[in-house]
Length: 105
View (cartoon, rainbow, N blue to C red):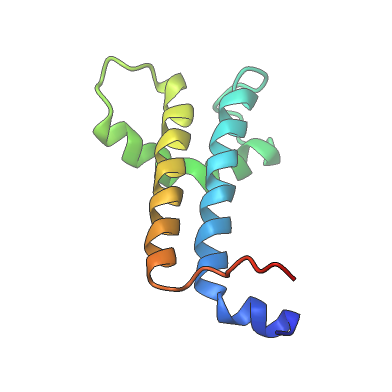
């Protein structure tokens, strides 16, 4: 199988898997960067990128998380849920035959 067909045949898997991985690691990066950058600094383009990538996951997490949890802890909690969403999507795609097989050679 050529590299092009390998990539194109499993395109939904690549998009979902890597998309969720980007959000997961961005949540962790946003949590760690919050110790160094004031949260409302609109001129910092790195902070704005983290917020843009993770805001939807953090809003959903805030809606299902008890209110006594500090807002500062929402990014790692969101990363936890995105990780489990990533595993669940992998299992669903694996059962549907959309995951590339590992071959011996």
